[in-house]
Length: 224
Image 1 (cartoon, rainbow, N blue to C red):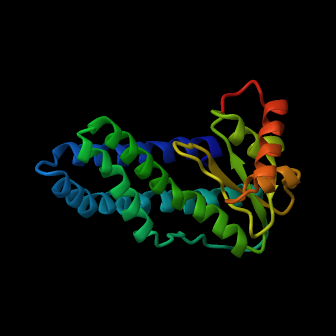
Image 2 (cartoon, rainbow, N blue to C red; image 1 turned 90 degrees about the horizontal axis):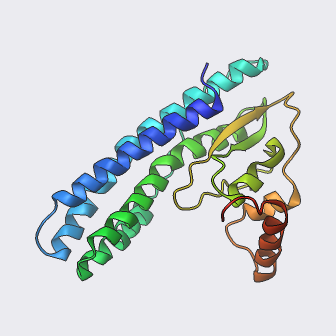
């Protein structure tokens, strides 16, 4: 039985391998910046797609393991959730290639690593959160934090369960948090108003200021 922490370690291993493969591809390109960008646009999406299959399958297996451990009634087969982000991924790769036009190899590598890590990890989170919406025995999902920053620690605090279908798994650059399902009988508290609000993609300047103040007050011991 794979624990949430073990699944997070496995996810990070797959994502790190995808990053290493993509950086190797970048370093193997040659010619003009335009040619190198073209080569990246041709190769990196395939790398991401290959490793996304792995993270999605990992999440589906993890979901079923967690369901079995919770001893809920009825059977359920988790489905891998792969959202088509072809256009966004290509735009992100082009952004990563931009520094090549200024001969800034290091910045291009850093940007590419960000893009590949985030996109490779995405299907794991989407698969867990997506199946909690379909499974009648699931009440929501919770965040398994890597503990690296105050924002993620706040979102995972109290083992909070995100029950609203509109709740988004907020992931920043180089975020190593994962999601775990919560089933009927789980005694964790529902996410607070602050946690739901912090998960939104868009926040007003006033909400952003309130969030910053909250983090400074309650999670000042962490970076971020």
